[in-house]
Length: 131
Image (cartoon, rainbow, N blue to C red; front, top):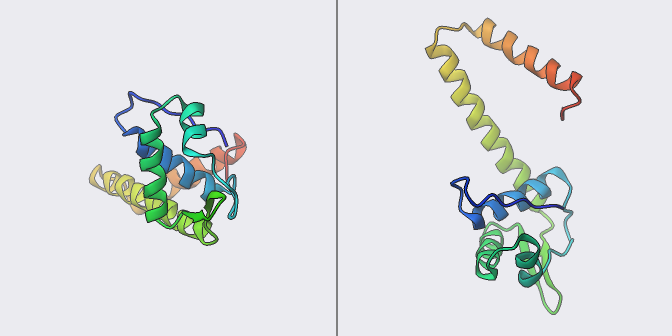
């Protein structure tokens, strides 16, 4: 999986690594049992400090996404996909809730909000976006 770090976007670099690994796992691009690059390899690939990668990996272990395999390194945990998908669903749900609340505050009815949602979903499908 290709990771992209944006040092000036306001999100700490270690958190960008955590988010991208979780997204990759949730999307199935990184599979359970798959080894992740070593701290040094990942730091070199991303041109970031190894301590930053180490911090991200520790967070991913604390979140039960990665697990240490003795003598081998870190691998994606068996239940990681389920955990990451649940977390991603919660994030999307929170964003929807925020947008829906904004729509209601601006005076849109439930029917209008539903039409907007359905229209945008159809538009994404036509454009070849994920469904």
